[in-house]
Image (cartoon, rainbow, N blue to C red; front, top):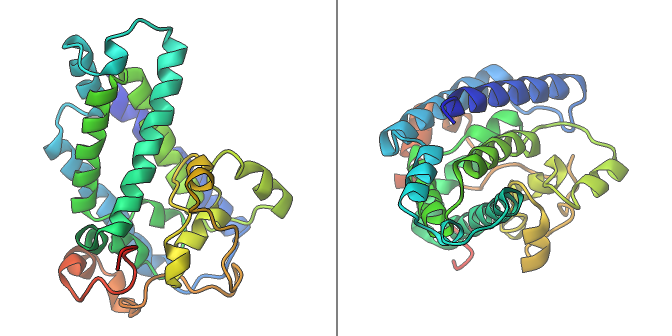
Length: 270
């Protein structure tokens, strides 16, 4: 548990590199912008987010889980059960929380203002998977901590979940070509790039679908699953209507985006 940060950083770096190479060798869609136009800001935001997380929770999510265990907070800390059971329950429950949180970021206009920076990327590739506003990261961390405290997830479960969430976010945002048959099989369990790309369509009804980040089951279960974009993956437009200028790819404009313009038609309840 003392090496949580190192483990997460190593897995993150390995998956980022693997997806970047895959994108270079077998891209799903042609790029609209060079990597040099997007990657510095997207990766810069990721670094800033890491700093924010350390400020919000210096102990780390796994450390907080250990604190909860020591104080017997949470359901799983009140019952005796095998480690494999608590690990499985924790992973499923935390993934469901992330799915529901994502839906809320699309349902509440104020939260959409923060989340839309993720959708305003004008291309869709592995770095889109780390392009989140620091305010969203802080809110997400607070939600995650509340879930850990209520559930009583172990430190091990939290580390495994965090590693899986980071890795699958990089994977399902990658601009990689996967054979149709393989994609259909994989998306029965986890979200694939073709499945999640629909969520980044400029079309509102498509943006408000496929909310899962890791397991694809929640979209099937709650009726938010959409198999394909209407225009096809090569014909669809990535992004949102309000921020389509290349200047929006700069880090400064990304950071102030929540306070610019109106929420538009994208919030589910809008």
